[in-house]
Amino acid sequence: MSVTDPAAGDFARRQHDLGGRELGPIDRHEHPRTLFEMRVDAMLMLLTHPDCGAFKIDAMRRAVENYSRLDYEQLPYYHRWLKAIRQLLVEQRVLTDQAIEARLAVLRARQESGGH
Image 1: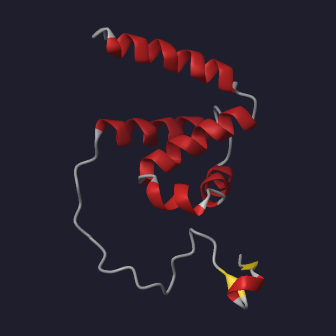
Image 2: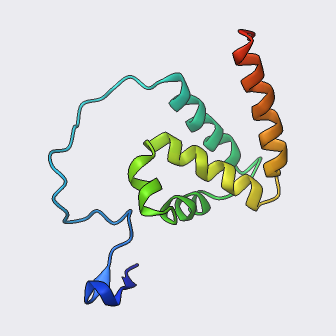
């Protein structure tokens, strides 16, 4: 979907629309997935599974595609996913921002104290 932008003269692309842009060569080498990447992927699979149904994968795509250009370009791929998952869990009233922040505070404190 293109968005009219009078300053661009015709249509401005959204940040996720990369088709036809000169972005340099694509690195097609596989890399080992990190534990973080595997956990984010697993979380998404669990939350979108019909048995849970916290949200649909289309909602995930919408959330990511609506990021600001800065977030879309600067956040690593799985960090975009994680941000979208958080947004959708709050949006769907599965969790609140306060509950998420409280849990993160506990985890940060545990990490700072060297605990597991």
